[in-house]
Image 1 (cartoon, rainbow, N blue to C red):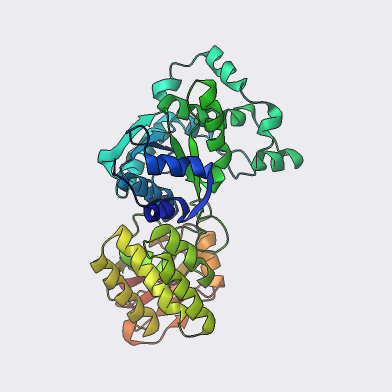
Image 2 (cartoon, rainbow, N blue to C red):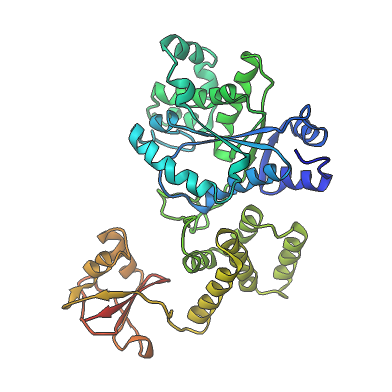
Length: 409
């Protein structure tokens, strides 16, 4: 454990991107004075509901890394039981449950991406099956007895669904109890998560004293919004940036964010200090600093975090060349086209939209253009979903803001 962390380091840990610290004075004292010479066990529970993570997941991962840099232990638990129930947090309906096979498959890639940020040598990895596979009916009923229906309905999402007449299954009530019991099984000192996990984390804090353990400290992180600038970043909303996205793609998507989101992205995903961020805000407010320049800095810092500085600089140069100088990218992938093809079918075949409806929506919004003479010629906006794209060698199809194909006839 790091000896005598400074007040500045602790302030940064407990405030940067943080929404809530339950009993902050207690956690601050543990960080300053030590935990009887032992590192704190900082728990994160994860339900691997998908094989691909977003940069929104990285917000909490980076906070774990900050704890590690002060010498504390990360304890990650793979929710191979809770994922099969489905997390009701922030939901207006029951979440679709997964099979054990799906959970295990997703967990493999989840951990690969997790350890791109969190130090593997300072991490314990556990699975809920280590304790829940030995649970019997009596254990489950006993666990249910620690919470009342009224207490469960204090939870915001359950309350909204109940008042709206939307069904809540009894298995959904089990979810926070199972996640809370993980803290008992792992003897966690601190648990962190997004603001949507506050209720679940507090259940763990409530359960630990029942089992003769000190109540864990709770730290919740502000969630970043997605590309729409409104809703939480998520795969289901298609407003996300993947952690594994190529540098250029990540840079371009970050530059598409609304200006008001920049501060939260800086705080959650970079190490640019608050004093400099305050200066950015003041200068943008008085008109002496162009928000575009601040966004370029934000995108460069974040891409560096997930890739490296060289790739971030190259991505910035490509972005400026393409959008500021109105030049097309130099690395457009080729697409073999033998004969004229309907534009919607072509977009789907090229993997530039997830469905026919998405492709038609892009066309309707004016997001599809054809360059029959390639990069040296003018573009034609495609507004008709029945448009036939000719098989012209070297012609370019642009779909959305960043996606292109070059036709090979």
